[in-house]
Length: 115
Image (cartoon, rainbow, N blue to C red):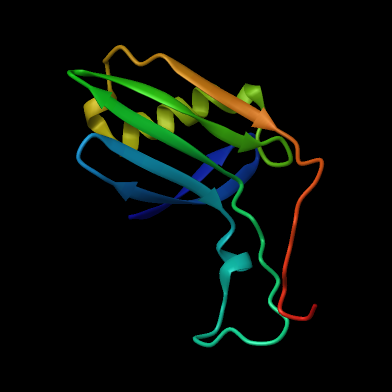
């Protein structure tokens, strides 16, 4: 299921990955993922903006994950929680402690098919 998250004047695509006891939420820009059917030569891989993991424990839930500071900030946390409650009604009005890291990238490794 794909949706759009809006907060503080920003909009990001969201994709969900479901399992029995957890859901993974990925934030990204769809415009950066317009790959053709065949990957060859130069390919620019744009990283996702972050991931959140919702784990279900009995009738409660735990939320953890990491979001890029380039796109997210602490002030968006309440909007993120509200968005998740709207998308996953079973976490509405349950005890849900959370820990979200807001990270900045200081280094990376890349292979793009050219070198």
